[in-house]
Length: 597
Image 1 (cartoon, rainbow, N blue to C red):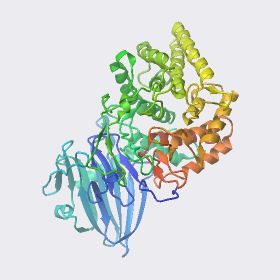
Image 2 (cartoon, rainbow, N blue to C red):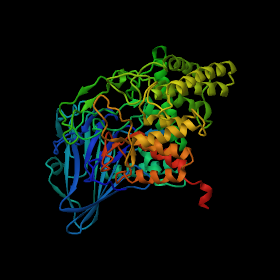
Image 3 (cartoon, helix red, strand yellow):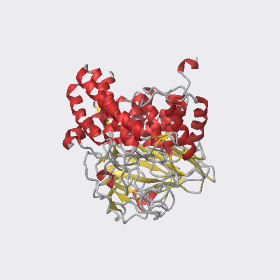
């Protein structure tokens, strides 16, 4: 699982679908936002060169060895440290999540339990939050057993049974038994930190084990799929149902580039892929919450017009600014807050929305099956898809400097109409089924005539264009053409021939607003692997899948991009697209369960 080079993205993620945190290989929390996934990063050292601030460290004196693993089938991280004298300790890091009083309990809280395992270990704690996106340091006050950080976005209290003076002054503490650190709302605990931490740990461990036990995992690559599923779960915001693209903002797509974006928002495109993957694993709860999220967005949309990305609360204005208090990942700024993609025209969004909601009409496990009223709402989106499929837009890759008629966008508009026809058939609405089937066919014919290049032997990135695009590989998953159609096979092989670099596929070759891409967008390789499997090249697809899995970090996670020469991870992290790729490929490529016995 090790990469070819050491990466600063050797990070573990902990969270509870309300907040998330990234822990590095030294057991330092270097990223965490409050009071929700898209909030103010109180720990932001990941995107700042000031190594002494914006972090929450627990380090062992004279440490010579650190081993980190997730507790089996959980989002609980275990770090074991050993010093030069044989003393050992462990740190358990997690965000509480479990069912209580008939509902989900997931507070804005991180728990760090430090246990002595052997000898007389000494630790030093550094609690150094920031606020206002690194521009300020919150006022710190303390009591007998707590430290208060006056973070404007959400005042925090660190409650502990460790000596407060030693924590504030970052002095060494002799670890006799167990110390507990509970960072959460500025409220008094109802029990001791030790008792509270133990209860939260036991309940959270029980929750994750139960959640994983209900997943429909494939026979092969089970641990890879389980870790990907847990990670996707942590990137969903239970309160509204929104799904963020990644936990972070502004991790550059490649070294020394201006390609730094804030990904802590819900792209309807990304969310569809996430929900589709989780639903295939049987995690219907996330699907139901996302349906609520998208239904609210559809209800608020004027004339059915959708934008590509929304805030977790459904807000439409994601005005982009620069966090001047943060220097950037390895000093590579700017660090951005907000994302101007909210103002872009991206026609594929209508297909993404309808594909996501379509589950509710066909999945009998759901509490609220879709009916005629919801179908009528979706038809408004279908009208937009049909009206826009042949018009220029920014495309899936969100070009900021040009607009063209992108084939992927037209393909998703076709999917919108095609799925509406299928839903109408399910609801026995014969006239509407014929209506949407006719519109889907119109788009289908146009794509086949204007996006097919006889010279290249492939569908092209744009109508009448001469460039290829890896997003066209999604065609095999959407049933746009039968897999026996020679145009499908020809397109897959043409894209491989032109866009493959080493073990990965580039998104495209043509220079964009910032020049030619330098790193590979990880999910494109997973799309290619799925396409190979669909074409019957299963053994080759399995080999390529194993090859890509080897580039995950030590915790089994992937970022958005990867350097094709060194294998180093780049881009926002952990990227939902990439983790979806693991699940979808494993589900398609695994041997059947019948072969296990």
